[in-house]
Length: 116
Image (tube, rainbow, N blue to C red; front, side, top):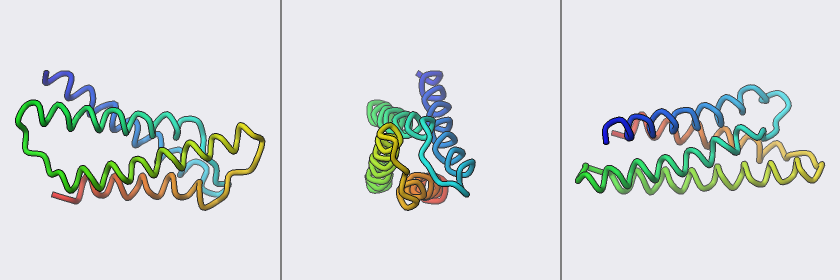
C-alpha cells in the first residue's frame, strides 16, 4: 500500500508540474496546451485516490482543505477543457482563461504546501 500511495503522490506532483510548467512556458503568449489538460485530469484523479486511500486507512484528513482543493481542481480542469476546446475549434484562447488555468494551479500548490 505504501508503494501505491507514493506512486500516486508522484503522479499528482507530475500533474501539478504539467499545469504550472505549461502556464510558465506560454506566459507571454497565453494558451492552454494539451499537457495542462492531462495534468488537470491527473490532479483530480490522483488527488481523489489519495484522499480515498487515506480515509480507508483511517488517516487524519482535513476535509475543509480537501474540499477547497477539489473545488479549485475542478475550476482548473474546466478552464483547461474550455481552452483545449477553443484550440480545437481554431479559436484563440482568452488570456484570462489561460491565466486562470496556471494561476489556480499555483494557488492549489500553495494550499497543499502552506495549509497545515
